[in-house]
Amino acid sequence: MSRPSLTHLVLIPSYNPGPKVVDTVGAALRVWRPVWVIVDGSTDGSAERLTDLASRESGLRVVELPKNQGKGAAVLAGLELAQAEGFTHALTMDSDGQHPADSLPDFMRTSHEHPEAMILGLPVFDESAPALRVRGRRISNTFANIETLCTGIGDSLFGFRVYPIAPLLAVMRGRHWMRRFDFDPEAAVRLRWRGVPALNLPAPVRYLKPEDGGVSHFHYWRDNVLLTWMHIRLLLGFLIRLPMLLARRFRGHP
Image (tube, rainbow, N blue to C red; front, side, top):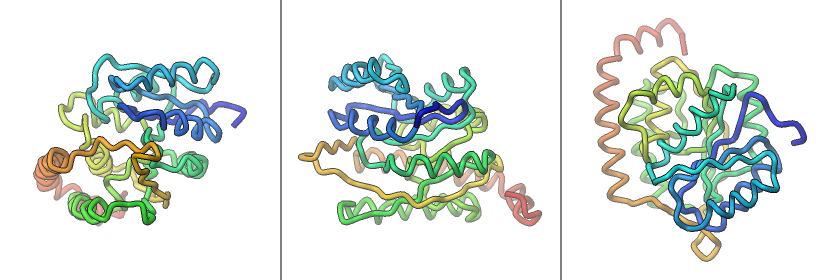
């Protein structure tokens, strides 16, 4: 892309992704600019690799956070900076090579056509996807659909998505949670509660093996406990909002 977008940027939170991050960022830069990487206290040398790449790529900005705070915290830091510089939308994607950079133009184009909406990636899994991860996410998706009266969240956990920045910041500011692995599902649910429409687009997913540069920071027990506590909070919030959500549904509002 020859001309950087003035409204939409790619935002990549990154924590110890290994050398693969350079390929991930390079692939994003080939189809969209600007690309911002929020380095979340990485200690694996990836910040230096990215800084070197940024010295040669005008479309890349690297922001280093002093210590690891979690994916949601890194996204929040990026959103605050992006809004201050006049951006209205951010596409979030992972730094580990799982998400499809080739799909960036389609997602951005859909966001331009529907600026009021969040554009949610609907993962298309191949044979590399761990069966336990694929089956496990169905639980979170079921709860997310209950919490939103089945109004559009195709996949609550997939982090390849475009957010309108202003409503997401309104949701996150002053809130203690949504700072780690709970960010993606809680963001989608709370934005639906605020009336932000959800549009779903399919996107392929790759799970790279360690020998291919794949890195995973998912901890089965810790992160599932975090998700369980998140859905308890959201279910309580859902019950409080149920009359409003039902009224909106009957009026045909998003």
